[in-house]
Image (cartoon, rainbow, N blue to C red; front, side, top):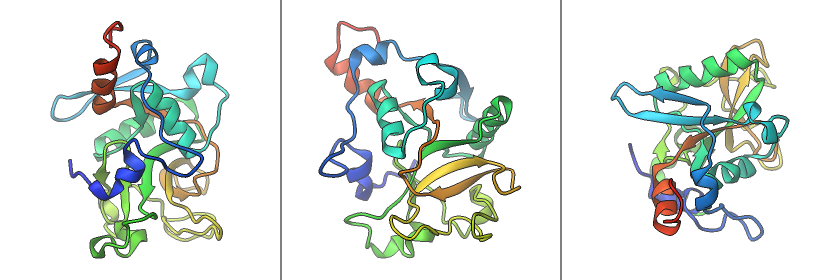
Length: 216
């Protein structure tokens, strides 16, 4: 996994904006976190997932990108990161199985202080990463290494950054919105969607160090 320290302002525990910050894990909530599915990667590591649409308190809930991450983070999880095509296929199968029309992932385009590094340019191609794991997403012009859609609202290949005000720095998976199958799309982060959470070992370790009375 390639760590991307420039993304600490989004991935870490620091403020995202003057009003909104990334949530810290709550040990009690972590001990009671719900796991709807387990997937084993090719190296034998297991990954636990929470699907917001299967949990009664969140079944009808749709939230923006940061709120999705924070709900996950309070439970020692984070929005799902899809570092391999195998994991991506697993998530797509779950969306197809339950007829989910879209979800948030932890995918993010670097568009904040520190993103002017030469190796990240152009940002639409080289600036994407999984904020939940700090792993870099392959360049978007290497289509076989990702799962970006060939089309979108303007009939252009994704990512296209088509919204004028905020742009589209967050990565969602849409289920056949543009007759394109279940594919990645860049989306403005204020849009509201269901989400998938995935266990985060750093957040689990953080909670274990601060909530010794809970079994995490």
